Length: 497
Image (spheres, rainbow, N blue to C red):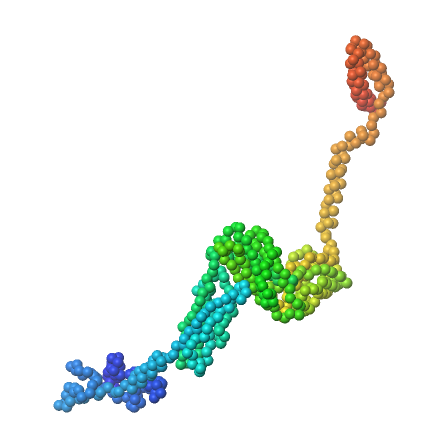
């Protein structure tokens, strides 16, 4: 019977007539009590079993004054459903909360929202306070910047009726502001009020990839590239301003190299300065079709020291002392140095950090050659920059014995001797003739000379006197050849004798 009663109770709960045993109880204050334990009803008393549905009974299971079928001539009354105080209390709580929400006061919005340029790339947003604000309201203004429809997530709360921001001239920029009562739950923030700053010019004509470097605290160099939709004859001009200048300054030292624009302007501050103003930079063109580009730069993040100079090396026994000149523009103890040295001609070496302009390296090899170079970096305590200087010029000290020279000499000298010997053997005969020329036989020379002269004199009488001189010259040449051949032929005869 108990199982059947519990089954009927679950069926009634499924129809929404009885609360679940695990449903929370409503407290007098509108809260919920702990779940009901097994064996207890929602009023806290013992569970009363509900009679099972009788066969042939089609009437309601709950009700007041309804009669069921008779058993043994006696009518059985089905117990009526218990009152439902918990849902009623919840409904009352919800109604009260809804009434309070409906009665919450919505604050009026600020008015006269407008902007103005303080300097290049700096905007001042202003607005007027809302009207009819209660004196108990701790009024503050919530402002937010939206760039191309995307909030910057840099919302500010302030009692002031203005906000100074950087200008985004090449993008759509909106400022929105609303009123809020801090620490007051009886009022709702006002609706947003906003105004827009629309860009001028053709999209894609603004300069891109703007980057600046502050070299040695002396001058700043900024580079950028032409916009993708800008014409090739676009002539960009850079203007800069920072707190301390009366008017924006124009950068006149500009150049273009392979599509990269560069402009350099002097930027110096006293060494005793611990804070540096933000640099506002505007890159624009005279044409209205080119969009301007604004940027704000923190100079302390752009510092690049100059290359260390006057690097000197001194070798003492097994130690090398390295020293270089200090920077004249940086304050004392504001630079860190890195010394890289290599043993031999290898590019891989060791790096030693130093806070002064000198370092000593002990335990060196006396028979090795060492190469040194130095670079500088700003300290975090002075400048928030990660830019290193360029490496200094390399300098070497020591000598390294190279065994390859001896190896080359050992191979080259015997080769030269062998080649020279072959050449001498090939030209030995010719060298012998040049050194010991043969001695001609005088008798043969006289005999041939006088005999040929007689023959020539007889034939010359018959020739034309004009060609006589030419013939004599030719005959002399022939005689010299005969004498040479005669001398060569007589030498073998003497050798045979």
